[in-house]
Image (cartoon, rainbow, N blue to C red; front, top):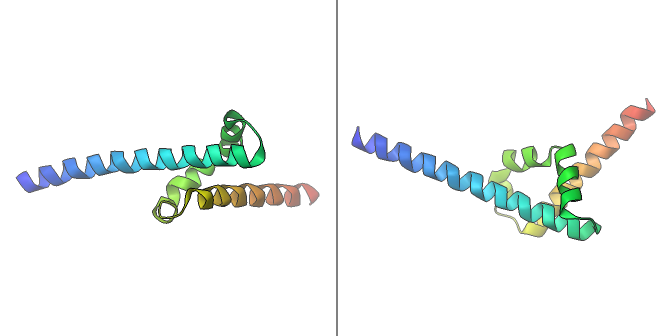
Amino acid sequence: MYLSANFHILYINNMDDIQHDQNLMLVYATEGYAKRHGISEKEAFGIFKEYGISDYFRKYYGVLHAQDFDEDVFFAEDLIERAKEKSLQETEK
C-alpha cells in the first residue's frame, strides 16, 4: 500500500511536469512562429488556437520534446499549411 501511494504521488507529479513542459514547448513554438512570420505573439496564439496546434503538440509531445525548438515551429507551420490547403480544397468543391 505504501509503495502504491508513493507511486501515485510520483505519477501525479510527473504529469504536472509533463503538462508544464508541454506548455513551455507551446510557448516557445508560438514565439518562434510569431518571429518567423513578423507577427505578434498574440496573433500567433490566435492562429495556433484556430488550427488546434496545441492539441497536436500535446498529442505528439513524446516525439516533439526531443526536437530542437525550431523543429517545433516547422511542425506548427506544416500543420497550419496543411489545414489551409485542406480548407481551400473543400471550398473549391
